[in-house]
Image (cartoon, rainbow, N blue to C red; front, side, top):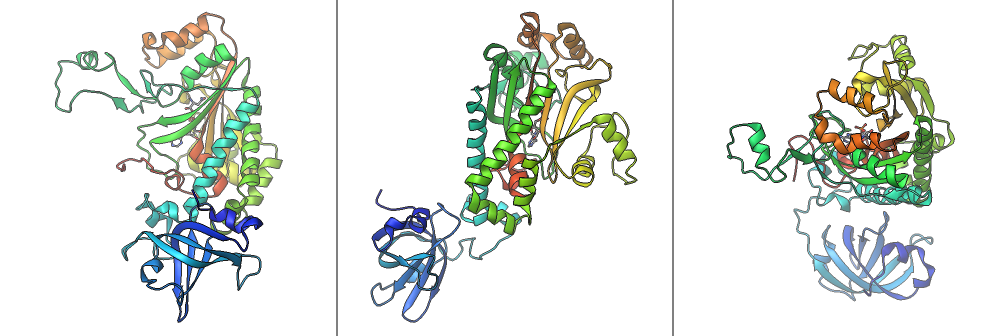
Length: 458
Ligand code: 4AD
């Protein structure tokens, strides 16, 4: 490949005063009497490179100036006339690689995020999305690095599954039957389906992750989870990327320490490795963002007992849409009040009522609560769901029976409590919610390439 990335042309001194070739798309252009200017961007950086065209040397420039067209430029890289700290290319040859006609949707310099959502296939050519997806990439790498450096094994858990890990009935069904197929009973329907039983897309790799941790010790998964949740909010998508570490011989306190350390590590990694993007977000999306993130890294995350959180909400004097009482599953308005108004920093809420949480969580001696925590972040709410797992065979069976679960389908999971059961804990981090927190972007649809939400897939 003979061309050089624009980011390198802009920063690597060795190309100065050399003849170089750059590729890219026209972001803006200007045509004056003798000279024309193009701002070219190839996606390698948020900033563009200016192409200067002497119209006496290059004729027929009409096609080259249309916004969105793809060009190949060859010319001399020189210090910019109007900015001694920058560079520009004096074009010697221009080739039109792909023309963009006048109906190219990204004509204006700034579009709303709502509008850009209608063109997911083109929005990556806008700065906000360039920056979001760079951060997403670096953040994903940081997550792997955090766990790999600490001896966690990366496990790929199945996407097709026969269980509903969270027990919330939000599993997308998988079937090979045609729409009009008729069977006498549900049982017959599933018996004659591909797997001979009901199957779906995994809502979480946790149950299989526990299997792996109880052999390998420390593992993490990082892949998509699917939820047929009828929640049309700014924080829910039907397909999200899920990071799920699971650690043998670790109790709730141990796993919370790992979660806090991981969050601080990945924030610091992004701040260090995405400087241009983070400055962009700080300026354009959330003023004070970098300061907020640095403060989070330097803080001790708050740990608040669920019962105490309920008292704080009741005594706040604030009127909530969902009235607060012990036993309530905290709603976004409550989560935000606790983390933004009361503590203004990340908060772990611990020891939730057992009836609002999943079957696999360790029951506390009080008989009412479980050793579980959610990590709440200002501006986003819950980003981590975490718990110590129930290791007592009988208690687990009784929690499953209470929820009318079919024990036969969880035989492997129960076996783990039968053969060498040990204390173990884990958590799930939603990657998109973490990106929202780090970038300040307030709608989850803007941090994933093709968001899948109720009534929306393309
Ligand atoms: O709290 P959740 O449901 O926990 C679990 O799935 C556990 N099995 C995790 C574990 O212990 N291994 O989900 C974990 C996180 C949430 O805190 C949230 O960040 C994200 O997954 N999440 C979603 N993100 C976007 N859209 C959705 N519909 C999400 N549902 C959960």
